Image (cartoon, rainbow, N blue to C red; front, side, top):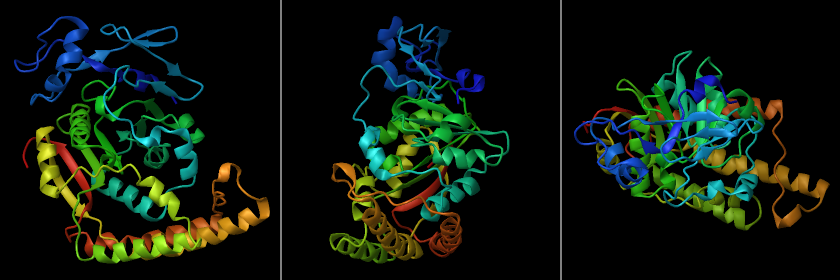
Length: 374
């Protein structure tokens, strides 16, 4: 979906307006000043200058500063606002085959994905009619979930592999999170789940800066990511992962898909204090934090569910023959009964947050607000 509401808020991802405070006002004429001074100006303590508004013309949206033309892909349901200059390495999530092998479906989120989505709803608390920007929206599944309660959802991702329903029902933008293509304070709240761990430290800082400038002073940002720490409870998770690898080697579960999902993790956040410093440098503060120690998730999702999916996949493969290209056959889409069971197990898995959410470990849910306090 490409709504007039979205088109009012998009901007050139790499061009900043000349106006700013004493520290971030333009010091060079034309686009050269945007290119050379972007990092310094965007990270200014005042919130930085606004980004240059795009003009509409046949074929897309034109930036009056750099003259780049950004296509409006109405058939695909998104606006292509990827920067026309290199801003760093691109995650392998931008690869088409990678998305195909992950096998994302249009089913509602369940199990750990639903735990994360419900924590986003609780901590971010978006109201009906309020807009939420999903940073790194992937196929658009979380944006669809967010929009289900009258919230206006928009998603931005570097890869155009959006679910058909997401392309129809939520606003989607093709873009780089390190150069968000939105006007200043365009969204009252935003969320980022399972994204920051794919970036190096400079990338994490840039994404936080871009998120900050896309929020008003009263805005909220929810993140789910992890620091390179662990608790004693995490020993159970590591044991479950070890067992999953052994079962994968025995051909009983598809351990390759989970390994594929985490294969380009950079894990740049060294500790929670390190994350707090990165937030402060970006003009954000951590207002609330809950940890995600997993015990029930490790048993239910990482072991039992994968054993069940492996059995279903082997039955489907025997019935359909070998999959093309040497890839393992995808598991059949779950039926209504299977989804109901998964939803019931999801509520059980929430005990991981209820019982252990105060025990410091690496994975965490965070609510961030504009402000430079630690």
